[in-house]
Amino acid sequence: MNLIKSISSIASSSVLSQAIGAFSVWLISHRYGMAEVGHYAMIYSNVLIGAQVCTFASQLLIPRQEEHELGQNVVFCLLQSLLLALPWAVITGLIFHLNIAFLYLLTFGYALVLIAENLSLRGGNYQFLTFQRIAVSLVVAIALLAMPNTTLFYIAWMAGILL
Image (cartoon, rainbow, N blue to C red):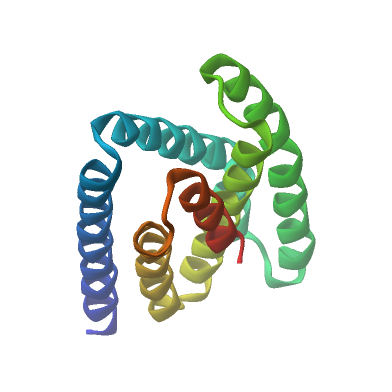
């Protein structure tokens, strides 16, 4: 019964997170125009792919490790993410003419989110996982509502993810 409850909680949080994301896209289009929606989508997709590339080890190692090896593997995953985010940001930043420092920090921030998700799944901490999924989406929506221009929105989004 707990497993069914956990699965439904995770699924519900994913649906709510997607709804918040759709609201954010709508808000971007109404505040800044459709061109900015494309810019946001390119950055967001780039960052998510980069975070997944950076954390491939956490997806393989963290859920399957013995308890006594977990600490060193978490450190490895963090260092791997910290290092791999840099060439990812440089290459994609140059290709798409985006701010490399911004891409680096946002990619690393989303890599931290993915590592935390894997640790939550490993530990069965589904409440934190559902909270985190909703919170990450809310960071974008709140940054959009609070910031008066796109530059400040992107800075607030990055800062919110890193915190």
